Length: 223
Image 1: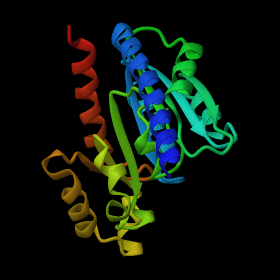
Image 2: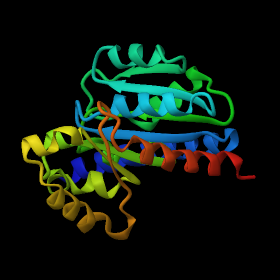
Image 3: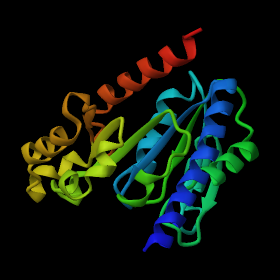
């Protein structure tokens, strides 16, 4: 057990060193990195696609797509006219800072760029690995159930923004919004930034886009 703990500690320390290197590069080049996390099918790609369509005419955008296998999401995102690079982990349940560092170098995004990182679909592993990001966004869908904040508190605790997607089906499947929000508030308290949206019907997207518009404008216009 002692050896196992040491190995895990060494892995996390190595990752943190790489994450710090990314932060230095991001600071020098004025990149804004967003680590997008959530379960498979929660709406991570839909969130990124929405952000691209909303802001690609105002800001430079690049995307790093993480997946266990396939290039399906990267192919979809590339049609939107932004730089995209696929990382396949071959079975690993999360992305690591080393692979993000290499991906950024290959992307060559240029200065003043928003870089979206779609992490592997998982509500456990990604929360423990720093990718040098400026912000963590967790996508949680109503279709998954209202108990996710109770079952995976570390993921939600580590988030800066929570996007609840697929609210168009919430009533039909018996999603308890009050219970869900109560669970989030128990974890986040006054620091909860929650947006309830449907990427299918566009409900709630104006509020979501307005939040990020102000965030990006403040970051890139700040001297």
